[in-house]
Amino acid sequence: MATHLVDQQQLLSDVRTVRELLANPETAFGDIQTHILHTLGPCTIGDDLVGFAAQPEATDRQPAIDFFDTAARVIEVESCYGWISRLIASVSEPFQHSYQQQGPDAAKTKSLRIEIDDVCRMAAYVLLTYGHRTELNKELISQLLQSDHVHLLTVSLPKVCSDLGVTTFRPREMPHGPTTPHDTDPVHVQFTNTEPAAHDPAAPADSTPGEAERPIEPAKPLPVPWSDAAQQIVFELDMLEEISLTQDDPDAPIKQSVWQSADYRYRRLQRIAGPRLLGPGLAHALETCDDVSKAHALLADIRTIVATGGPLALAPALTEDAFNYMTALRVDIDGTQAEAARQWVRQSCADAAFVVLSWGNELHQTWQLTRHLLEGDVSAFSAAVQPLLETPVG
Image 1 (spheres, rainbow, N blue to C red):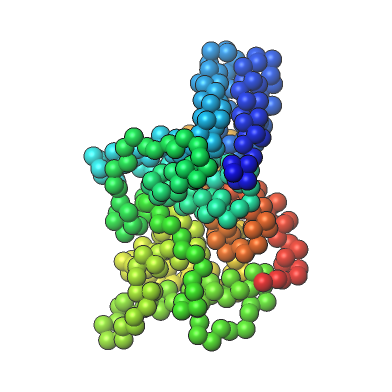
Image 2 (cartoon, rainbow, N blue to C red):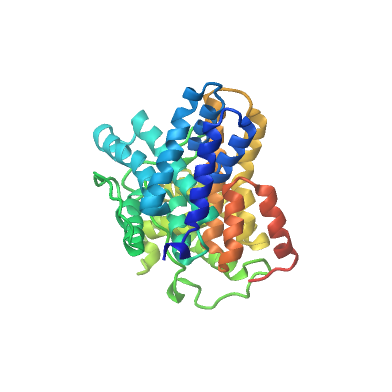
């Protein structure tokens, strides 16, 4: 069954190849860097391993060799999913402990939260690269892009391992941390004086809602790619704005609807604006009425983008500011500001990838577009999308 879910043989081969390249002092650094990036994608773990590989002494490379040695052993025994479980647990467990002991605002807690995001993005890249294009893998990638580490470790990944008949990895300790995005204040990723907010932890996204959540009399489909999804997004944006306006009006009639649930509204907004940066920040503004006029203006901007270009137009919009800032910063400059900006760009790309994955209804097409975004290759994404813009399809 494992062969139907992930190309285990290719993953193992690539991991062992990197290990051999690292162990050979004659290997050119560029070759090692290319192979690590291909295997793990753009992530801090990969950055650190490349840093070890750049060292001239063989002993200095040993931590990178050990990483790929361990990876090969775990993948062979516990499958790709068991390896992913262990990587997430290595940061999720200390995060949960720090959250309980020191609180969400502690520097260590925030640092570990960013590490969780990074590991989850790496795991999503691995499944996009080596996983077969199945609905199960799509759901796991979706949870990874949301950094839904608790659910992944306690429900999703153990079940997959059990179903595959491989050794099921379970965390030694998984204390109950916050379970909804409203249990704690937003976590901030610092990249400049203005910080985008991201709640912790992210809640799993819903499946596409049933007819009860759609307009009673659907409007004419929008003349854009993925038009049905575009129409649904516009409807949801209208509902989000309507709910936020009625919250301030004590005389407004209260309608019994799933949209009355703050958690439901948050999950829908994640699918439209991303799970970690803009989406949670918008949700926080709408729920607390903190700068709600600016939030409404952003919703209006998103509505315009979707109405004119469809869901696929959201991806470049979600990443544009990040890439512009990164270019202005000149990323070859050393320092924490450059590193924070790099994290911001990667998270922006992951958020855009999640939005595309959430709304695409053709698995193979959506898969490749999601991978382009997670890699940060917006040019490849735009090239793949261009034919769809020229001939819009639902």
